[in-house]
Image (tube, rainbow, N blue to C red; front, top):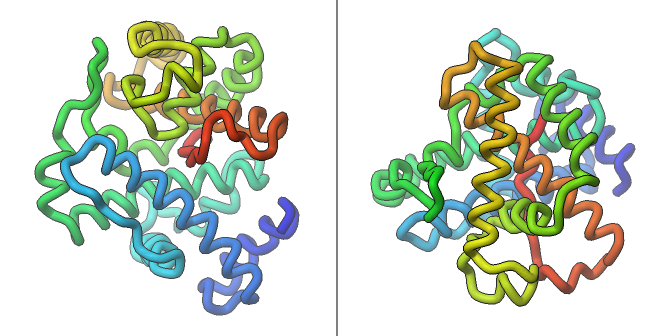
Length: 266
């Protein structure tokens, strides 16, 4: 299914109000898109938590996503289906990034409802070995991440567009490893990317500091937690862009193995 066909499938889903009412081909495609992102977030939970959660089958992931969209609405009163198809440029990239934003909350609720012990142990646990630790709660944020202003969304998109080609090799490695859902100290990282954990942690911190300073200058009204979420969304979007470029250059992408990208930049 190409981009135009997938966009048509999303519009049909919005118009008909249920995956069960669209064609079988469209339903399978959208279930796959949703479940891929669901599994990507579950991988993050497993990497940083103390359990080994397994994502539900594709239809169940899609059902959880669809149920969330039906039962919740944004703080501005807009229904999520309407928001998903009317935000930003209204193209496939924008729709898929919106799906990822929603999936964060879907997985967050699924963990809390179905695996309360994992949620209790891991959601507030500080992660990482660098100077800027975050909690799993920050990796699975609440709806504040979905209420970006137009200016904030434009900053993310323009920064990705203008800076991705000028990134240093080690910076590209940092962002690709984040997109992969891996950690800098994981076995085989040096062999795959050419950099050790010390350099990767250093440049991860430098990227955070650089974009955080820019965000503070542009959006001084943001609370620290909101600013951090904005920067993390930017970094995830950069990782997605780099992954697509690498995949286009090498279709089998054997150098990096399987990679699930967190598509959450608006």
